[in-house]
Image 1 (cartoon, rainbow, N blue to C red):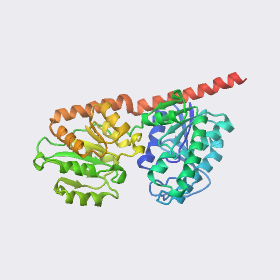
Image 2 (cartoon, rainbow, N blue to C red; image 1 turned 90 degrees about the horizontal axis):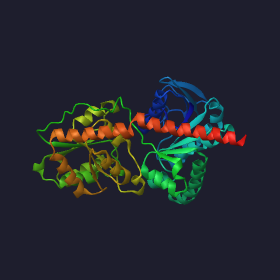
Image 3 (tube, rainbow, N blue to C red; image 1 turned 60 degrees about the vertical axis):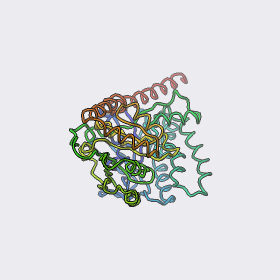
Image 4 (tube, one colour; image 1 turned 45 degrees about the vertical axis):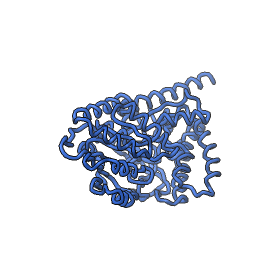
Length: 415
């Protein structure tokens, strides 16, 4: 198939913006011809990457993929006005130019975060009669309102507009892929037919996240590691409070890898609870180091606060842990807890449950290194079977093929 992949974010952007590149490479590996329509790279700093300057159009090539770069207003700060300009500017440029750039493509895959990218899919369908599959990464307006990006006075009118806009995009899409079962349930509640929605989990770069030999020892302290952003949404205070419920002679240590605004508060909390000597703040590490870093601890930790948004949020760190073959403890609601239980890789505790988390620490501490390795292997097998690039790309390929077939069939009936 000749596929137009439309996304506001693309390589060389990093973090969550690196996911589109992984999707494109997986589809290419299955023999498809993919061209990317995207913006100029500026995530996560909001500043253009070195070597790029804004212009009306740039034909780029990244790792052998043709990339069409369109103008946008670069921003990724706390200003609601600037973030809205960032979203709307790419919506306008992609809506106007995607029908020109995608003429040779048979079908489009629209990477929906932000949701405004969906307008380009509508334009392709209306002007070129090209079907599109919508790949939803976060639900709007839910994400905007839950994160408080919009001023309070704008929340209700923005919700009204965005609900109607998103519903229009859902109706226009030939198929919809979502990254968690909870998202599918919500969209069905908003009137999208179940048959139109597939759950396609995000995967990780499997060259970076892979099983490596563990370097944690059966002797000495038992190490629980959290690796990722350290902000308010993670609610990592529960991990410090859980540690304080354990006796010092139980010899459990908490290692925090990463950075974020909550580090000072967590340091103060550890001091107040008398566990500062059992919590280490080790700063961020490069993504290329993470499999080795995770292997240096006995078990990995994933935390999310108990917010309605996080019941259907699927942070990519859990896929990274499973792909690396590490056992895991999750302290999170909804789909994260369900995935942990299904994978057989560890323990799922309710969000904010310090006592339950302390018991999970004890349970993990009681296992032998071999038993912990068995949990990691179970998680890795589950990743390969249900979450891997091979499996996800196969699902997306099926949705794209179906969308293309339905459009041809509709055209035959019309003639």
